[in-house]
Each structure stands twice: as structure tokens, then as C-alpha cells.
Image (tube, rainbow, N blue to C red):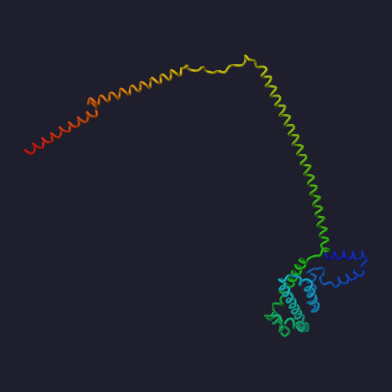
Length: 324
């Protein structure tokens, strides 16, 4: 929230303008003792690190309680575990730094003040042996907390957590005043640009409409002149033609003219002739059947006589053989 400092200056100018001197003095006093540091995570992290390096347990816990009461307590319940883990890690970082700085009295002071609260947490069960441990940096239980990697990871995690929390904080209307003004300025500029663009488009559209109307009028006049000229030419040509120039159509004369009744009579004669021929053939067939000269009956008699002769010959031959 870099705009917080700017807004503080605006507020101070407003108080001076209104003549609120007592309020202005109270504002200056509270700003000097401010712990939020204009909601800048790097400055708060610097305060934590200074308290740890100086082994100032009171300053460390005071700053943490301020953040917990004003910011962390307003977060959702799901962040409670992360907040508690960061607090315990920060206290362990304080103990390790005091031990590395050869300040055993600060380590003893820590457990004397916080033993009642830490006994209820299973995470601190092994840490009560820490003041009596020799070469704690080599102990498997505490060696990890002496490494630079763990300490840097702790500070980075705390910084990222504070940055995220500050970005998610609801801002008052007064803080958003500058943002709203800048947003309105951008909107007004965008509107002006859009109006200019609309005017340019309208002008282009009018020009295109005028050009199209001009071309349509020119094409219509040219077509009208062509039609008039063609009509005039046809009328003059018709006037020049005379009746003598008109030739009749070349139609060939019809063939032989035949009377329809004659055709019907010839068809009737041909039909009567065909019926007479059929009657004569039937009469001839009947005569042949009656006289016995039918070709079919003649064939039957001939076959019967031939069969009789063959049978007599066979019989005579068989008798002769038997006698012999």
C-alpha cells in the first residue's frame, strides 16, 4: 500500500486547513509509534529481525500481538494453523539466535516467561531440554534450526504471508479516492476517443453515400440516352421501308389432294377382299376332309399299310426257319 503515505499527507493538509491542531499532534504522535509501517511487509520483517538479533523478547511479542489482534484475527479460520506455525517458528528462531550469540540468560528468560504457555503444546516438549544441551547445533533435535537455509526460509515465508494479507485487506473509501479519480480520468479519455472515432466514421459514411448516388445518376443518364437513340433509329428504319420491299413467306404448296371418303371406301374394299379369301380357304379345307383326301389321313393310311406288310414278312420268315 504505497499510497498510504500519500493519503497521510493529504489528511495532514486537510487538518491544517481545518485548524484541527490537537488532532494533528495526535496524528503525528501515533505515526511515530506506528507498528504497521504503512502496511509494508519488508519493514515489519525488519522490525522482527531487529528484535531477534537484539534478543528483545518484549518487542518481538508486542509486535506479534499487534498483528495478531488487528490483522490475523480477522482472517478466516483456515489460516489459524499457518499463523500459529509462523509464531512458533519465530520464537524458535529467537532461541537459536540467542544461543548462538552466547546469551544463555536470554534463553532462560524465555522459558521462565513462556513456560506456562508452551507446556500445553506438544511441539515444545523437546525444547525444554534446549537450555541444558551442550553443542545444541550438533544435536539431531535442534541442528536443523541452526542452518541458514531454515532461517532464510522462515523469513521469506513470513514476508510472503504478510504481503498476501495486506493485499487482501478491505480498503476504506478514503484510501480508494486516488484510484477512483484515476479510473474516472481514464474513462473520460476513452469516451472522448470513442466520440472522435464515431464522428470520423460518420463522415466517411456520408462521403461513400454521396459517391454512390453520383455514380448511380451518371449510369442512369447514360442508359436513358442509349434507349432514346435506339428508339429513334428503329423509327427511322421503319419509315424508310415500303410495301414493295416486303417479301411473302416462302411456303411450299401441299401434296395431292385426296378425298377422305375415297380413302374410307378403299379401306372397306380391302377388308371385304380379305374376308372372301378366308371363306374360300375354309371351304376348300372342308371339301378335302369330306373326300378323304386329307393329307393327314392319307399319311395315317400309308403308315398302317406299311406296318402290315412288314409283319407278314416276319411271320413267313419265322415259319420257314422252323421247318428247316
